[in-house]
Structures are given as structure tokens and as C-alpha cells.
Image (cartoon, rainbow, N blue to C red; front, top):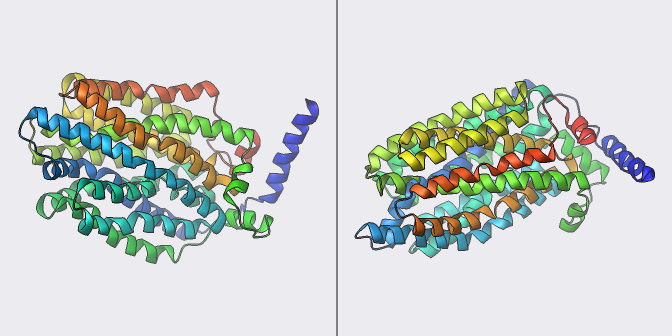
Length: 433
């Protein structure tokens, strides 16, 4: 047993030597550039993830015959079922993550942006039925599930500001452009262009990414392996026992969050416009306020991550989500829907920052990819679960109560005593975890 522990410690020492950590700080100007560009990638991600809140009522009206409340409930349930069936496509996100570890962060981000952007213009011209739309939509969502944009910031930011810089990119990403501009596009042009406009964002980002540099930490690991290509299986074999522990923690939190948030974003509009009887414009105003709370949450989360700690943010975000979603189901009051966005964004801030810092540099993106792939079962489970709940609760009250109860599950991750990473360098984290 003693020899085993000595072997593990030596492996950690060798890793630390192979990753000199490139402690040389990047310039403040480049760090700002990186935060802005990664924030824009996050903005594209957020838009494509949340525009469906506005698009789904239009999609159901176009592809289903809705004449009364009963037929509306059937349409919601059937849409959720097919969304879950097509959701298996999102598991391809693992290969984007592996690509970024093997070929570099810059090339990985370019691939990611193309995966998100190219199908959006195809949605405009090829969505002749709900099945073709869901096929293209699922490819888009595969890209939005990667979280790759957080990795370069984690690898370049100073330890004491890593949470803040990561949250600043997140803040840029959650500015509710989808609720402000997207609402106008969906209501005045067509719901398809609600997605299609992101093709032009892709073009802008490809230009900006041309000027991005791969983080020195990634270059060090590439040099250490003498620039050999990393096969998928070879990369997976590099995952250690500690990596597997944190993958399990991350999947528990992220899978639960994905299911609950998918329920909220897909059927929030249907709930207010359908059972509660709000107009599309009234719901648009509700969604705008909810969207404006996202950057507020990102800012507060960023400060708390660095000043109070990672675990505190996870606990506060989870408990707040539970209370708000259950209260929404019991009362139907819009303020609880809006506050649910605030607290669920807090959990997402923890996910983005913690996943990007807890794994070693050489397998960081792949490890995140494994976490994300596990979590993306939520894009199958969530819609199928929603389909069943919408059948049981046609007025959707119980739908929200169960979504709230789900958010108790992330608190179970604390039973595994995850390392508090506040203020630690990436190399200290690898040694202490």
C-alpha cells in the first residue's frame, strides 16, 4: 500500500514537471481580448440554447394542428418526445473536446463555432418539417454543450482572478440578446431566422479566432509528448482515479442542471402563453427580465467564486433554484420564473469554472468532454421526462414542482468532499485534489 501511494505521488510530480505551468503571465490587453472573444462564443452558445423559448410556440403552431387545450398538451408532449429522440446526436460533443486537446484550443474553438454556426443557416432553408428541424437543431445543440470557451481563460488567467475572468466571459455570454433582438426576429420575420442569424456571428468569430494564441500550458503539454497525436483511446487511458472522481461529481451536477434547465427553457413560453393565458408580448417581457438577471448572476457568482468559494456558490444556486421552481408551480407567478434563471445561472457558473480548473492540462478538454457527454444524457432524458410529465400535468403545475425537486440532487456532490479550488494555481489543484 505504501509503495502504491509513493507511485501516485511520483506520477503527480512527473506531471508537474512536464507541465511547468507556464506561469509567465499574459498581458492584460490579451487577457481582455480573450475574455471578450470567449464571451462572444458563449453568447452564441446562449442564444442558440435559449432562443427555443421563443421559437417553440411558433414551431408547435406550424407543425401541429392545435384547436383546444387538449390538442396543445398533446403537441407539447409529442415535441418533447421527438426532441429527446434526436438528442442522441449531442453525444458527438466528446470529439470536439478531444480535438481541442489534440490539435489545440484555437483549432478546437474554430471547429466548435462552425458546428454551431453552419447548421443554423440550413435551419432557415431546410426546416420543411419538425424532423428536419430537430436534426439540424440537435447538431447545433451538440456544439452549445461543449463549454470549450471556458478552457483558454482558465489556462491563462491568474489564480486569484480565475473565477472572476471566467464569470466575465460568462457574463458577456448571458446578456439577453436572444430575448431582446431574438424576440423581434421571431415575431416579425420568422422563427427559423431566430436560429439563422447566428450564421453571421460564426463569420465574425472565425475572424477573431484567427488572432487567438494557444495557451502556453497547452503548448507545454504538446512539447512534452513531442507533438505526437493523441488518439481518443490513448487520451482516455490518461485519466486517473482522481479524474474519474471529479468526472462523476461533475456529471451528477451537470446532468441534473441540464434536465431542469432544459425543462424551463423549452416550455417556459408554452406555460405562460398556454395554461396561464399570457400574450406572446407579455411573455417576451417576462423573458427579457429573466435574461437580464443572467449577467447579474454571472457577476455576483464571479465575485463569490473567488471571495467566498466554489462550494458556497453551488449550494446557494441549487437551493435558490429549488425554491423558485417549486414556487412557480404552486403560484404561476412570473417573478419565480425569473429568479429561477438567476439561481440556475449561479450553478452554471460553478460548472463552467470548476470543470475547467479541476483537471490536468493535458487531458483538460477531454475530461470536460467526458463530463459534458455524460451530462448530455439530459438532452435525451430531459425531453422524454418532460413528455411524460406534460401528459400527467397538462396544466404544467406539477411539471415545475418536479423540476425544482431535481435541483436538490447537485447538493449530493458535496458528500464526495470536492476540493475547494479558490485561489489555487492549476498545478496546486492537481497535487491537492
